[in-house]
Image (cartoon, rainbow, N blue to C red; front, side, top):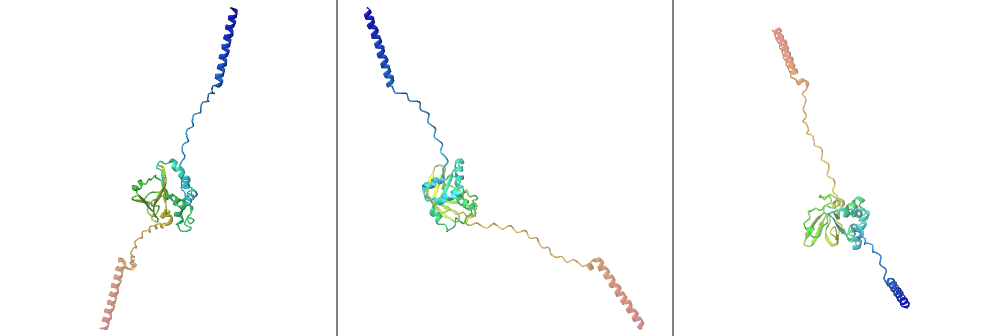
Amino acid sequence: MMIMKQQYLIFTLSFLLLFFLHCSRTLAQAPAQAPAEAPAEAPAPPGPTDLTKILQKAGQFTTFIRLLKSTQVANQLLGQLNNSNNGMTIFAPTDNAFSSLKSGTLNSLNDEQQAELVQFHIVPTYLTSSTFQTVSNPLRTQAGDSADGKFPLNVTTSGNTVNITTGLTNTSISGTIYTDGQLAVYQVDKVLQPLQVFDPRPPAPAPAPAKSKKKKAVIADSPDDTPADNSKAVTLTNMHSLVLFGVGAIVIALSL
């Protein structure tokens, strides 16, 4: 009996030992639990469109880029594109377009005129190729007043061709460089020359003062021509005649 109890105890302890070893191996072989992944960060909102980078990527716009930067218009566009709901349209002249200008043309312009030249190529409205057919002329550019002799820019279409006239320049859009629903950039092969910069009209002369009507000279009557003086003159004449008549009568009487 005692032997059976010892055997049962040994069997139980052996079973528990084997079970413990098996659990230990299972836990050791189990892969470690991966740490919880951090939530993915939201993508950063896109920044405003950079016109100079678009032109640099397109190539052949080195002069226009230089003018955009030197006149600070490029920085202004960054802010305007970020805050405007109307969008922008840019007419970008190629380097060949600037080379076609007379030698020294750009250097002859002062800082204000260079800024006006660049702004004349910017319309503060997003225009697609189809909306050119319905726009009202003259287009108002960022250069300012679109009245005749100032900064007029007229656009007409003929089929798929978009023609641009300024009063000094006649050209057409030769290609689309970029469009995204807010900014449209079109290539032009001539520099758009505004009248105000390249052919300013002299200011209108000031109106002449109204001429006063010349008064006819009135010859003043001499003091002797007054009625009172005239009556005195008549009286003296009559007295003089009467004296002469009396003297004559006396002379005749003496002669008798």
